[in-house]
Length: 375
Image 1 (tube, rainbow, N blue to C red):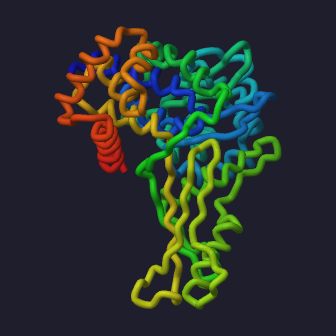
Image 2 (spheres, one colour):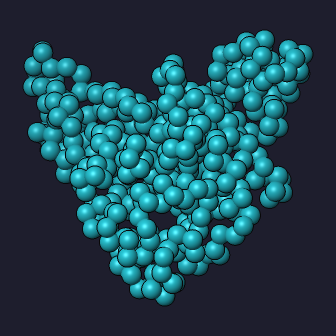
């Protein structure tokens, strides 16, 4: 598949992702990953805005961002960053579409490279060149998407800007409040991590993914208005979970199962507590496994993209695997039932499956395999 064909397919996939009606947060980790296939970059992030155009929340692909966020909010946000640019709130209110380094900064390049903002915030993240998409709908600023490259990569050009600009209406659609919860069935996202605690549930260490997932599960906004950032913490519910695990092995018949399931706009989070040393249960340290689940439709769409299918065949495969009938699929896609039946036959033949259940399993397995390759 040529580069242009691959990018067209990536663009079509991102449009579909934004139109699933699942909400901006639950799809954002996937959306940022998929953007790499449309516009190569070192890293991507998204910043949500509140009704006053102030920073409300964010998601960054790079784990380093979590450690830099407190310093950014305490020292730079809408204050010292104005030494080199106009600040987040001004930019969201006044900028439209895609801008790059040259439009964003109010100083020349040498001054920017010597600034504290560059050396304390941008440089540690290898953020030398960037393009930013300011997402608006009906005149309201919803947020800002940023893609960046490091100093060893080429700057973004006009073609990159055009590709990103075409995503504006679809991102606005994804960020709009959903008329319903959006998902009836959830599947494992492949994202998992481990938290190690003592017997009382006090956290001792986090794997990088566990730290990120706990941050999302807590869903505590950045509270940029107060210049504070949420610290990664172990909720009291998880402390109770460790107490339940200890109680089970102490013979406490009132102890509940050491499992916590929590849901919010980022997905469904499952926490399970175990003794790290299985040879001496009831003693030593506790390991809390944390994983994130995402809507079935999202998992099927990601899996279909990895399959040797045409765009229309992928669309048919996702809808059939999600449980829609042939007629419902035809109505959703605006094609005839005969067309859906023909595509279904090709999909089954190419993927080596014979029914909807096997098709669903095949797509979700492809999604898990893709996630394991990128972890």
